[in-house]
Length: 229
Image 1: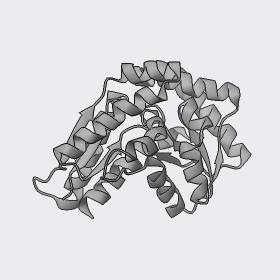
Image 2 (image 1 turned 180 degrees about the horizontal axis):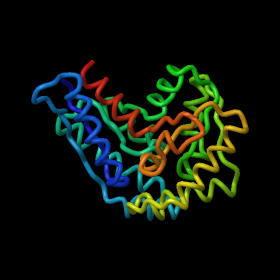
Image 3 (image 1 turned 135 degrees about the horizontal axis):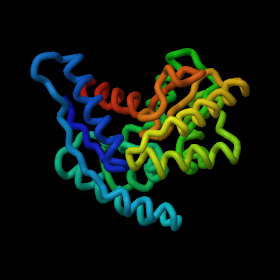
Image 4 (image 1 turned 60 degrees about the vertical axis):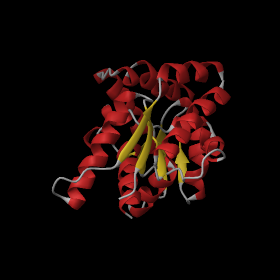
């Protein structure tokens, strides 16, 4: 079994889910007393959130590169960044380490294509929904990607940072997400990516007018695939 290096804490709420999914999947496959070999570096999300607000992505690149280098030195065989948004910095981090990073968008596109879906909605932070670091990889995999309009994008982003990252689960926000997903379906989307690792706390399959692809579940499962490959 390979050792998984997790960069977590963004937020810690979703990192807990990663740890749980990975270990449950290892037990499901191997049985008995098996558990995953994991090294984790959990960052202080307040520092990264402040940098994002200032547009200081270089500062965040330095924090996550340091975390990845520490995990490599400690013996991790590959890196999992337990958040979508910080995958923006994967090219910066890869320059400083020699072990691979398991990219969340590649894991998601693989799962979506296995289900025969070609048109997919994307929900996530404003950065994820407006910049190329996830969308372009999805498009390169042959997927057509839909994102919310400006007003709905603001709602999605606000719920993530001001509620979900703080552990707040509100029915009013769930209803807004359900409405936004319904609009994506009307536009032609065949499924929806829960492209922030906290969204799965709010939206389940039964809440969605479209099949959901929770990147937390997909990414954690892909980590197990790589660890046992």
